Image 1 (tube, rainbow, N blue to C red):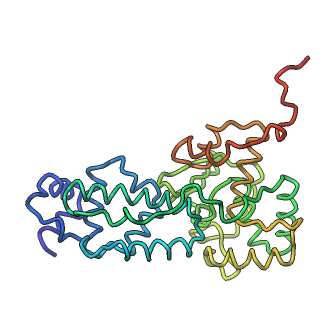
Image 2: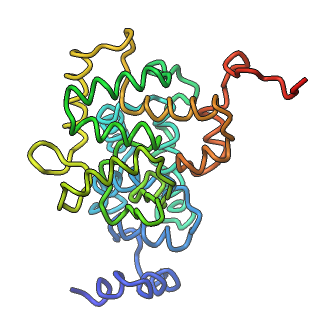
Image 3: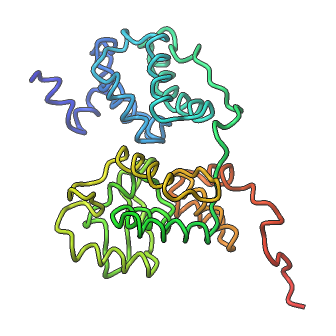
Length: 308
């Protein structure tokens, strides 16, 4: 290992490189090295706004040198990333903005003469790929009842998903070390924005998790029939089969629609937008309002503030 590499993998090493970067030819660094220097210098960088997108970018390009990155290479990967994750044009526009912060920094540092992202366009106001599906409390109850009869392993996972409003990966990643039955607190780690998020467990979820714990001696909370942690692919396949056996009022719902339904029903019940932001783990209140600020007046029951 070279002297540089020994230094780099420590905080002090990154700081040293940042202060003395004129001594190095940044063009010869790998992208993962440049990203670390960038994040050290730009603490509020948009690049770390969504941890999963940053990790995907580093997995694809981290070991390449920056001069090998072209507009065509980035475009091909972004389209592939969009298809793999079923992202809309609007999603991709936000993701591009996240990466753009890093490339603008490279321009400022004169590492690049041209931003390879500048010619890649996604439509910010594009029509969503599919309508958002909102499920009522009675429909959610029907789903859980059907799941309990269909597959108890899936029932436990979806019960947690429905009652927390969490993303499916956050629930899949839950470990027993993330659950504190003494304080009634559940903590999601490895979240989309990279920050831990804790919530109080409703009584039904508390009892369900305690029951699982008594029969589970593994690290992860949710296990499949083979006693192994569920994967996203297994959940998606199982859900498709379940919906064929138990169709719901012609509504083709997906896992993320349970999160949307949580938000909608929370606000309809009288919950506040800032409370919802904290529960869902959004980075900003603007995102929460953009997603869920369109609750219609006729959705609010008994809207009068008066008792007379």
